[in-house]
Length: 481
Image (cartoon, rainbow, N blue to C red; front, side, top):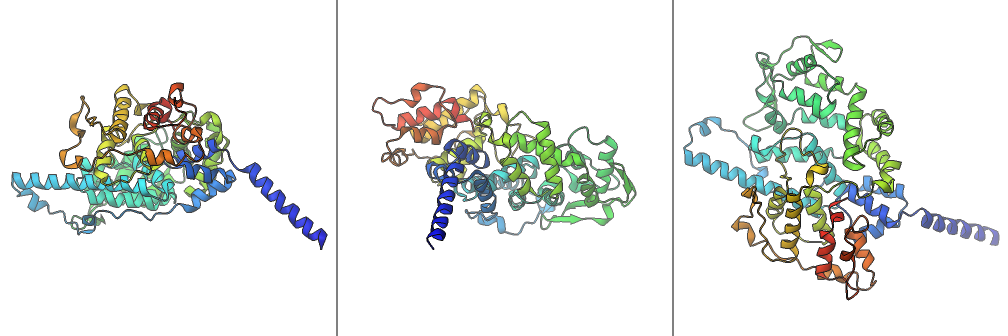
């Protein structure tokens, strides 16, 4: 009996010791949370630091869900009817009122998504929803029906970590996409090539992996794929469809849109194309071809399921390599949402946050073009860096620093939103660290590596105050993830 008890105690001791040895360091936990979400607060970093790294990745993937925390605007569930005849006969005043109402709804939609990103218990889901939003782009400026962009957002969240092939099939029937790329009016008499071109170039295959003939034939296959003007839902108009024989990527047949997508996903380049884009988003701006090829094979072997791919990507040596920590620039959404989450700042009016994001160069639901936001070094200029600092000053000092850009004043905060624009008190955040008296823990939460400006990490009193926190966030390292 004594031998059995000794054996059990030895096993338990080995488990405890191995767990401690395998637990990841704070820096790696912070890196994982920064890339798969919007950064972590002190409690999150501490929690993930107690986990084995692979267990932490599995936990991130398992806890991802598509349920939203914030209730969307009620008008999103009202029936949609596109009355073209009424709009054609509307007066100037009526048209102006309609446009103003749509802009108001669009801003409310943007504010809702920002509030969701700040409050979600599944930041990885929102990060992937944002990734798909910038991959399969559509724009409110052209669609002018916020409800259609909301439905697309729901679609991206549903497939955030789902199946890429299924998502591509679904996006081909998405009304916002069909409207944005003009496929809703494509017919056998006049096939529109916009959607077919972007499907091949930007969504699935990438340049050099198709011909102009492939574009034309794919466009024929998607004729008749349109929008029901009474409901805003997908509708197939049989009389507009070209049922003739097509030649596409080396195959022949009377293909329709579904056939085109299936043939695209038979091409090995499809997996490589998306993996390369995910690499740039999650690892670094220097792709490792051999590793991308390995991940692409895993992607194909798992029938384009995202979770197995993201698991392998996140446990890869390149993702975990310390040289890749803090090497990506935060997008405006990363910068704003991350700041709000770290300091647990409640979002009283998401429209204010949406204006701030647009001012910094990322106007949600309104990407600059079909290629989306280029990201990377494009996020930072002398002007945008100053705007980021002004936003922090306004949030934490409340000194009235204006959210306006001299070069482009259209994002200046309107008077109707300023009443919800309040100074944030940083003292509760600082007080969380008083018991430990560990200034370095605060620095580790805010910065992915040592500050460039050493003076920002020092304080005459030995304790950090509001000015010290702002100095840390003014350091160039705060712009990195």
